[in-house]
Image 1: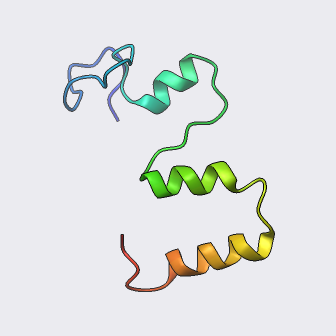
Image 2 (image 1 turned 120 degrees about the vertical axis):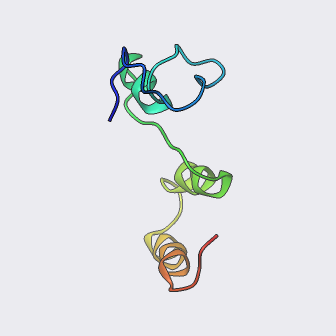
Image 3 (image 1 turned 180 degrees about the vertical axis):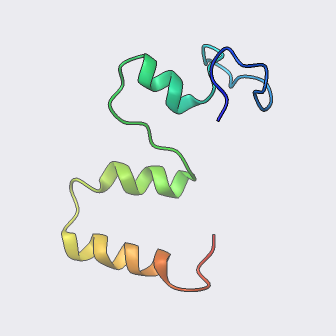
Length: 71
């Protein structure tokens, strides 16, 4: 894995980033405790995970983990 000062970065820095290796690295350096990546669906599920019942979360996981359920 390249380090921040390494020329082996892949592509230009993301808009709004400080030019670090990844958005996760930038968030770590900014002191953020959590960064959610992935699709919009993944980010929405993470946002509502604290307010929905465990049974609903289990069903959401079951549909995503089912073989052939690639998004």
